[in-house]
Length: 86
Image 1: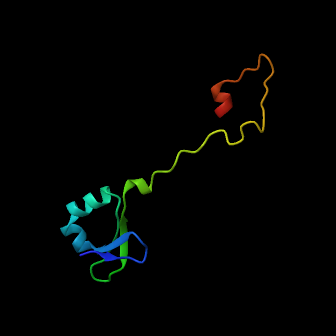
Image 2: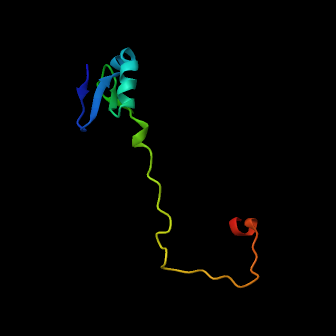
Image 3: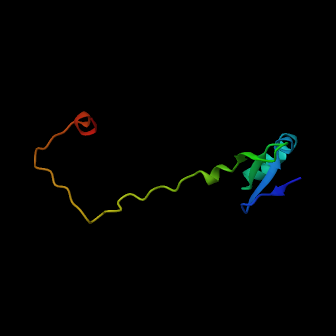
């Protein structure tokens, strides 16, 4: 049923196989497998079915420049949020 694509870890299946075995494929995607969906006639890849874990970006570390610069405001300095953010 499944065919391996050029990319390691991504299995290529036809649209017909995708429709016929959707529940089974969905379980495998939840387990971390990726699928390329190919047109049944032309065998050209038309889309991908991937686990969401491949799209979660790691949180950016704040404070990369910590200790490299300082900001000092004069006593009594006031600025509204609207002035600051425009």
